Image (cartoon, rainbow, N blue to C red):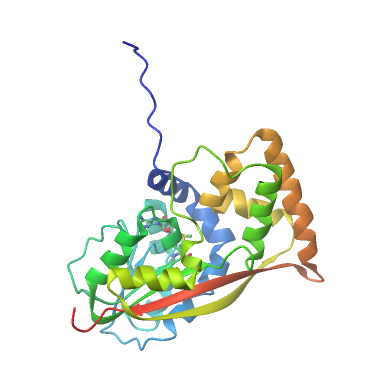
Length: 279
Ligand SMILES: C[S@@+](CC[C@H](N)C(=O)[O-])C[C@H]1O[C@@H](n2cnc3c(N)ncnc32)[C@H](O)[C@@H]1O
Protein backbone atom coordinates (compact mmCIF):
# COMPACT_ATOMS: atom_id res chain seq x y z
CA UNK A 1 0.00 0.00 0.00
CA UNK A 2 1.45 3.38 -0.83
CA UNK A 3 1.69 5.92 1.94
CA UNK A 4 1.50 8.95 -0.32
CA UNK A 5 -1.68 10.88 -0.01
CA UNK A 6 -2.75 12.40 -3.28
CA UNK A 7 -3.58 16.10 -3.10
CA UNK A 8 -7.22 16.34 -4.14
CA UNK A 9 -7.70 18.20 -7.42
CA UNK A 10 -9.83 21.28 -6.74
CA UNK A 11 -13.18 21.44 -8.50
CA UNK A 12 -14.04 24.24 -10.90
CA UNK A 13 -16.21 25.79 -8.21
CA UNK A 14 -13.37 25.70 -5.65
CA UNK A 15 -10.97 27.28 -8.15
CA UNK A 16 -13.50 30.01 -8.90
CA UNK A 17 -14.07 30.73 -5.21
CA UNK A 18 -10.34 30.88 -4.42
CA UNK A 19 -9.74 33.02 -7.50
CA UNK A 20 -12.38 35.62 -6.69
CA UNK A 21 -11.34 35.71 -3.05
CA UNK A 22 -7.77 36.56 -4.10
CA UNK A 23 -8.70 38.94 -6.90
CA UNK A 24 -11.55 40.95 -5.38
CA UNK A 25 -9.60 44.21 -5.01
CA UNK A 26 -7.96 44.01 -8.45
CA UNK A 27 -11.29 43.12 -10.06
CA UNK A 28 -12.84 46.22 -8.53
CA UNK A 29 -9.90 48.40 -9.64
CA UNK A 30 -9.45 47.01 -13.16
CA UNK A 31 -12.77 45.60 -14.45
CA UNK A 32 -15.28 47.15 -12.06
CA UNK A 33 -15.46 50.36 -14.11
CA UNK A 34 -16.73 48.38 -17.09
CA UNK A 35 -19.23 46.10 -15.35
CA UNK A 36 -20.53 48.96 -13.19
CA UNK A 37 -21.58 50.79 -16.34
CA UNK A 38 -23.99 47.94 -17.17
CA UNK A 39 -25.86 48.38 -13.87
CA UNK A 40 -28.07 51.27 -15.00
CA UNK A 41 -29.19 49.35 -18.11
CA UNK A 42 -30.06 46.34 -15.97
CA UNK A 43 -32.25 48.38 -13.65
CA UNK A 44 -33.82 50.61 -16.32
CA UNK A 45 -36.78 48.34 -17.11
CA UNK A 46 -38.25 48.10 -13.61
CA UNK A 47 -40.04 50.61 -11.43
CA UNK A 48 -38.22 50.52 -8.13
CA UNK A 49 -39.92 51.68 -4.95
CA UNK A 50 -39.03 51.32 -1.24
CA UNK A 51 -41.13 48.14 -1.14
CA UNK A 52 -39.14 46.52 -3.96
CA UNK A 53 -37.08 43.60 -2.59
CA UNK A 54 -34.05 43.05 -4.84
CA UNK A 55 -31.43 40.32 -4.54
CA UNK A 56 -28.15 40.79 -6.44
CA UNK A 57 -26.60 37.33 -6.84
CA UNK A 58 -22.82 37.05 -7.43
CA UNK A 59 -22.78 40.73 -6.46
CA UNK A 60 -18.98 41.12 -6.48
CA UNK A 61 -18.15 44.66 -5.29
CA UNK A 62 -21.89 45.45 -5.15
CA UNK A 63 -22.50 47.73 -8.14
CA UNK A 64 -26.08 46.64 -8.90
CA UNK A 65 -27.00 46.50 -5.24
CA UNK A 66 -25.58 49.99 -4.63
CA UNK A 67 -27.44 51.48 -7.58
CA UNK A 68 -30.73 49.73 -6.75
CA UNK A 69 -30.42 51.01 -3.18
CA UNK A 70 -29.90 54.56 -4.46
CA UNK A 71 -33.16 54.12 -6.44
CA UNK A 72 -34.93 53.26 -3.19
CA UNK A 73 -35.06 49.45 -3.28
CA UNK A 74 -34.68 47.19 -0.27
CA UNK A 75 -31.53 45.39 -1.39
CA UNK A 76 -29.48 42.33 -0.48
CA UNK A 77 -26.23 41.42 -2.25
CA UNK A 78 -24.88 37.86 -2.11
CA UNK A 79 -21.53 36.44 -3.19
CA UNK A 80 -19.57 33.31 -2.26
CA UNK A 81 -16.24 35.15 -1.93
CA UNK A 82 -15.98 36.78 1.52
CA UNK A 83 -13.48 39.35 0.15
CA UNK A 84 -16.09 40.47 -2.39
CA UNK A 85 -18.75 40.75 0.30
CA UNK A 86 -16.39 42.81 2.48
CA UNK A 87 -15.52 45.09 -0.44
CA UNK A 88 -19.20 45.54 -1.35
CA UNK A 89 -20.04 46.43 2.25
CA UNK A 90 -17.25 49.03 2.29
CA UNK A 91 -18.48 50.49 -1.01
CA UNK A 92 -22.14 50.59 -0.05
CA UNK A 93 -22.40 50.61 3.76
CA UNK A 94 -26.17 51.20 3.71
CA UNK A 95 -26.89 47.97 1.80
CA UNK A 96 -27.03 44.47 3.21
CA UNK A 97 -24.45 42.01 1.85
CA UNK A 98 -23.92 38.39 2.76
CA UNK A 99 -21.91 35.32 1.82
CA UNK A 100 -23.85 32.62 0.01
CA UNK A 101 -24.02 30.33 -2.97
CA UNK A 102 -25.96 31.25 -6.12
CA UNK A 103 -26.76 27.57 -6.56
CA UNK A 104 -28.31 27.23 -3.08
CA UNK A 105 -29.81 30.54 -2.07
CA UNK A 106 -30.43 30.97 1.69
CA UNK A 107 -33.91 32.50 1.30
CA UNK A 108 -37.46 31.26 1.56
CA UNK A 109 -39.60 30.93 -1.56
CA UNK A 110 -41.23 34.02 -3.05
CA UNK A 111 -39.20 36.58 -1.08
CA UNK A 112 -37.97 38.93 -3.83
CA UNK A 113 -39.47 41.12 -6.57
CA UNK A 114 -36.27 41.26 -8.63
CA UNK A 115 -33.23 38.99 -8.78
CA UNK A 116 -30.16 40.17 -10.70
CA UNK A 117 -26.96 38.34 -11.61
CA UNK A 118 -24.41 40.47 -13.47
CA UNK A 119 -21.59 38.54 -15.13
CA UNK A 120 -22.08 35.72 -12.64
CA UNK A 121 -23.85 32.91 -14.49
CA UNK A 122 -20.83 32.23 -16.71
CA UNK A 123 -18.80 31.47 -13.57
CA UNK A 124 -21.12 28.88 -12.11
CA UNK A 125 -20.49 25.15 -12.10
CA UNK A 126 -24.22 24.39 -12.31
CA UNK A 127 -26.01 27.41 -13.81
CA UNK A 128 -29.31 25.49 -14.13
CA UNK A 129 -29.43 25.20 -10.34
CA UNK A 130 -28.92 28.96 -10.06
CA UNK A 131 -31.79 29.59 -12.50
CA UNK A 132 -34.09 27.29 -10.54
CA UNK A 133 -33.07 28.96 -7.28
CA UNK A 134 -33.75 32.43 -8.71
CA UNK A 135 -37.20 31.26 -9.82
CA UNK A 136 -37.93 29.75 -6.40
CA UNK A 137 -37.16 32.89 -4.40
CA UNK A 138 -38.92 35.28 -6.80
CA UNK A 139 -42.49 36.30 -6.11
CA UNK A 140 -44.96 35.38 -8.86
CA UNK A 141 -44.63 38.05 -11.56
CA UNK A 142 -41.11 38.88 -10.31
CA UNK A 143 -38.29 39.55 -12.76
CA UNK A 144 -34.91 37.85 -13.21
CA UNK A 145 -32.15 39.75 -15.01
CA UNK A 146 -28.69 38.58 -15.91
CA UNK A 147 -25.79 39.73 -18.07
CA UNK A 148 -22.97 37.83 -19.75
CA UNK A 149 -20.24 38.87 -22.16
CA UNK A 150 -20.91 38.57 -25.87
CA UNK A 151 -18.99 36.03 -27.95
CA UNK A 152 -15.30 36.56 -28.88
CA UNK A 153 -16.31 37.41 -32.48
CA UNK A 154 -17.73 40.65 -31.08
CA UNK A 155 -15.83 41.03 -27.80
CA UNK A 156 -12.39 42.50 -28.56
CA UNK A 157 -10.66 41.51 -25.31
CA UNK A 158 -11.77 37.86 -25.32
CA UNK A 159 -11.06 37.51 -29.04
CA UNK A 160 -7.49 38.81 -28.65
CA UNK A 161 -6.81 36.62 -25.62
CA UNK A 162 -8.35 33.41 -27.01
CA UNK A 163 -6.76 33.86 -30.45
CA UNK A 164 -3.35 34.30 -28.80
CA UNK A 165 -3.83 31.20 -26.65
CA UNK A 166 -5.03 29.08 -29.59
CA UNK A 167 -2.14 30.24 -31.79
CA UNK A 168 0.71 29.96 -29.28
CA UNK A 169 -0.63 27.58 -26.64
CA UNK A 170 -3.49 25.16 -26.24
CA UNK A 171 -7.03 25.04 -24.93
CA UNK A 172 -6.59 21.32 -24.24
CA UNK A 173 -5.55 21.77 -20.61
CA UNK A 174 -5.80 19.67 -17.45
CA UNK A 175 -8.37 21.97 -15.86
CA UNK A 176 -11.47 20.70 -14.04
CA UNK A 177 -14.56 20.41 -16.26
CA UNK A 178 -16.70 23.54 -16.45
CA UNK A 179 -19.67 24.72 -18.50
CA UNK A 180 -18.75 26.61 -21.70
CA UNK A 181 -17.84 30.22 -20.88
CA UNK A 182 -19.94 31.66 -23.73
CA UNK A 183 -22.95 29.35 -23.37
CA UNK A 184 -25.32 32.14 -22.32
CA UNK A 185 -23.99 34.55 -24.95
CA UNK A 186 -26.34 32.71 -27.30
CA UNK A 187 -29.87 34.17 -26.97
CA UNK A 188 -31.44 30.89 -28.15
CA UNK A 189 -29.64 28.97 -25.40
CA UNK A 190 -30.66 31.61 -22.84
CA UNK A 191 -34.33 31.38 -23.75
CA UNK A 192 -34.17 27.60 -23.69
CA UNK A 193 -32.44 27.38 -20.28
CA UNK A 194 -34.75 29.99 -18.75
CA UNK A 195 -37.81 28.24 -20.20
CA UNK A 196 -36.62 24.90 -18.81
CA UNK A 197 -36.27 26.50 -15.38
CA UNK A 198 -39.87 27.77 -15.56
CA UNK A 199 -39.47 31.42 -16.62
CA UNK A 200 -41.59 33.17 -19.26
CA UNK A 201 -41.50 36.46 -21.22
CA UNK A 202 -37.79 36.34 -22.02
CA UNK A 203 -36.23 39.45 -23.56
CA UNK A 204 -32.68 39.72 -24.85
CA UNK A 205 -30.81 43.00 -25.39
CA UNK A 206 -27.28 43.89 -26.41
CA UNK A 207 -25.40 46.62 -24.58
CA UNK A 208 -22.12 47.93 -25.95
CA UNK A 209 -19.53 48.77 -23.30
CA UNK A 210 -15.92 49.82 -23.88
CA UNK A 211 -12.65 49.29 -22.13
CA UNK A 212 -10.40 52.37 -22.21
CA UNK A 213 -6.73 51.68 -21.51
CA UNK A 214 -3.79 54.09 -21.48
CA UNK A 215 -1.31 51.36 -22.27
CA UNK A 216 -1.58 47.94 -23.97
CA UNK A 217 0.03 46.29 -20.95
CA UNK A 218 -3.19 47.08 -19.05
CA UNK A 219 -4.80 44.24 -21.01
CA UNK A 220 -2.27 41.80 -19.63
CA UNK A 221 -2.63 43.15 -16.10
CA UNK A 222 -6.39 42.82 -16.41
CA UNK A 223 -6.12 39.26 -17.69
CA UNK A 224 -3.70 38.09 -15.02
CA UNK A 225 -4.88 40.01 -11.97
CA UNK A 226 -8.60 40.48 -12.30
CA UNK A 227 -10.03 37.56 -14.27
CA UNK A 228 -10.37 34.02 -12.97
CA UNK A 229 -11.34 31.65 -15.81
CA UNK A 230 -9.29 33.46 -18.47
CA UNK A 231 -6.29 33.73 -16.12
CA UNK A 232 -6.47 29.97 -15.47
CA UNK A 233 -6.13 29.36 -19.23
CA UNK A 234 -2.95 31.45 -19.32
CA UNK A 235 -1.41 30.06 -16.13
CA UNK A 236 -1.88 26.46 -17.33
CA UNK A 237 0.27 27.02 -20.45
CA UNK A 238 3.99 26.22 -20.61
CA UNK A 239 6.37 29.04 -19.66
CA UNK A 240 7.43 29.48 -23.29
CA UNK A 241 3.86 29.59 -24.55
CA UNK A 242 2.93 32.15 -21.90
CA UNK A 243 5.62 34.53 -23.17
CA UNK A 244 4.43 34.17 -26.78
CA UNK A 245 0.78 34.56 -25.80
CA UNK A 246 1.52 37.79 -23.94
CA UNK A 247 3.54 39.14 -26.88
CA UNK A 248 0.69 38.29 -29.26
CA UNK A 249 -1.84 40.06 -27.03
CA UNK A 250 0.30 43.22 -26.98
CA UNK A 251 0.80 43.00 -30.74
CA UNK A 252 -2.95 42.68 -31.43
CA UNK A 253 -3.82 45.42 -28.96
CA UNK A 254 -1.92 47.87 -31.19
CA UNK A 255 -4.85 47.71 -33.64
CA UNK A 256 -7.05 49.37 -31.04
CA UNK A 257 -4.78 52.36 -30.40
CA UNK A 258 -6.45 55.72 -30.81
CA UNK A 259 -5.29 59.26 -30.07
CA UNK A 260 -6.37 59.05 -26.43
CA UNK A 261 -5.33 55.45 -25.73
CA UNK A 262 -6.71 52.01 -26.44
CA UNK A 263 -10.42 51.40 -26.86
CA UNK A 264 -11.81 47.85 -26.96
CA UNK A 265 -15.43 46.80 -27.38
CA UNK A 266 -16.84 44.77 -24.48
CA UNK A 267 -20.38 43.96 -25.70
CA UNK A 268 -22.85 42.52 -23.24
CA UNK A 269 -25.90 40.30 -23.61
CA UNK A 270 -28.61 41.21 -21.10
CA UNK A 271 -31.51 38.81 -20.55
CA UNK A 272 -34.65 39.37 -18.56
CA UNK A 273 -37.36 36.86 -17.75
CA UNK A 274 -40.45 36.71 -15.56
CA UNK A 275 -41.72 34.17 -13.04
CA UNK A 276 -45.25 33.27 -14.17
CA UNK A 277 -48.10 34.60 -12.02
CA UNK A 278 -49.54 31.15 -11.56
CA UNK A 279 -46.62 29.04 -10.62
C1 LIG B 1 -17.24 38.59 -12.79
S1 LIG B 1 -17.65 38.81 -11.12
C2 LIG B 1 -19.13 39.81 -11.27
C3 LIG B 1 -19.28 40.75 -10.09
C4 LIG B 1 -20.39 41.80 -10.23
N1 LIG B 1 -21.69 41.18 -10.32
C5 LIG B 1 -20.16 42.73 -11.38
O1 LIG B 1 -21.10 42.96 -12.15
O2 LIG B 1 -19.05 43.28 -11.50
C6 LIG B 1 -18.31 37.22 -10.72
C7 LIG B 1 -18.72 37.12 -9.26
O3 LIG B 1 -19.46 35.90 -9.10
C8 LIG B 1 -19.15 35.38 -7.82
N2 LIG B 1 -19.54 33.96 -7.84
C9 LIG B 1 -19.07 32.98 -8.65
N3 LIG B 1 -19.67 31.81 -8.36
C10 LIG B 1 -20.55 32.05 -7.35
C11 LIG B 1 -21.47 31.25 -6.63
N4 LIG B 1 -21.61 29.93 -6.87
N5 LIG B 1 -22.23 31.84 -5.68
C12 LIG B 1 -22.10 33.15 -5.40
N6 LIG B 1 -21.22 33.97 -6.04
C13 LIG B 1 -20.47 33.43 -7.01
C14 LIG B 1 -17.67 35.66 -7.67
O4 LIG B 1 -17.24 35.60 -6.35
C15 LIG B 1 -17.57 37.06 -8.28
O5 LIG B 1 -17.73 38.06 -7.30
